[in-house]
Length: 274
Image 1 (cartoon, one colour):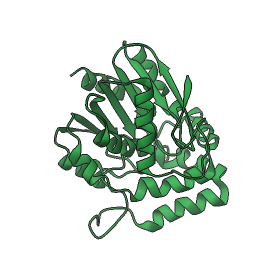
Image 2: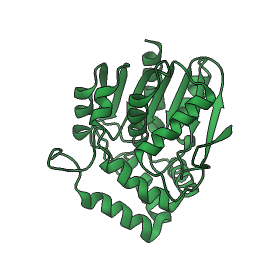
Image 3: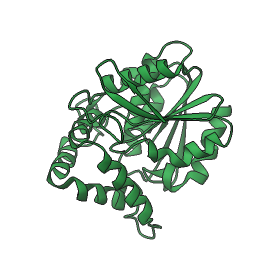
């Protein structure tokens, strides 16, 4: 574990375990590097170097008042990759982290990135607009902001206990530990960072980033994702990628890396090795 200090003075916390080809994990909103525990333990055990950072304002990184936009998030990753001299890396991003991966990979220096994976990821754009009629209405994200300001602690119980892991579905095997761990990660971060990040993950258009990526990209998505509906994300992203492949998981929720690591991890490993 360690930290870097970015050019604007932000301290970014990261974990760096093992040896071998680097695999970099990018977490979703409002979580931290800890959300990748199941994947990091799996890959370090399979001979890879695994890195995961807490996005600025999240987890153990600085609770900055500014910089909560995709350009800055990607710039932070560029500084991290430069500091750790990461080359031929595989970047894996979930949800908001998938947007971060798309922007970073599109802007990365030659030789830094070998492959990328977008898991339940927000690209191309979540917000409903004239050019994206299938997106979610602005009032959905305004509702997130209102709930966060009104009672962030309760909101951060309701999200994992409900749609994030599909625990609101009939017959779901609910894990209180998973819910509590989501809450723990979320409450470690800063309220303003989480508030501002809602705009970043919902309104950023990644269309040009996806078009610019020239490495192989695996797009993984559950078809029962209630947070980032597959029809307006994975099904559109795959059409924009030059070297993309899509794998859909019937009945899987948004947080499928946590609920189904026994399925997701081998698929990730197969792609990394391919």
